[in-house]
Length: 282
Image (tube, rainbow, N blue to C red; front, side):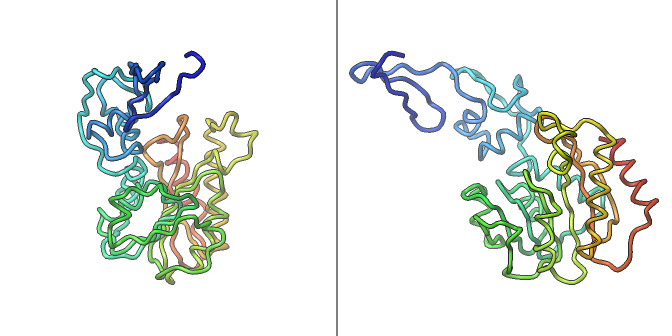
């Protein structure tokens, strides 16, 4: 690239150089996520990423992997949700036999909306999608009349909701669920139920997560047990623990803790057994 040359973007993913007076040279490669969206094979970059990670794009194993512009890109099956988070939640709903039909829900850490999408497809009546970010929720969900979007909203500072939810789901990053959840649960309907995605890399100390990855099953167990114990302070009783079924970024294992607003504590032996089974299946 010479002085005076200018990088430009034309549409989604077409990258090239202006050279001299208007002459244009297209770059021969584009990221797979953008190409999938351009060709109508995915609705969003998040969904494109989910397709690649699920092994549904022939010949491509990593999101963003470079693709030649004239390459034949094939998707063997459509992603069921706007992001792979929906698949994680569906796994938990099935494994823990949680019925969503007709229920009012809150999705804490909605992001693109994988959990929200899963809840709606499972029959939720209404969903409040909460996220500290802005403009991330998939347009299809944003336009759905059953969805109330609360963007630029820090769950830790939440003081009110449009309705008291019966079911709370949570998927947050770079913050402990023990900080993000209590204000939401305090606004929930008595007898609430919660499915909490616990990510050890954000719950354990830095010493236990070198380079952001936790590989020690004992740390997984300790983290899940600590969240289960903390839940007692929020009026939550642990009634189940399962592996998410899909690894998180960098291969991190993640776990769902199933809580209900119910008096009394779960049998410690039951909790230890659930955690052991979840960890062994991870």
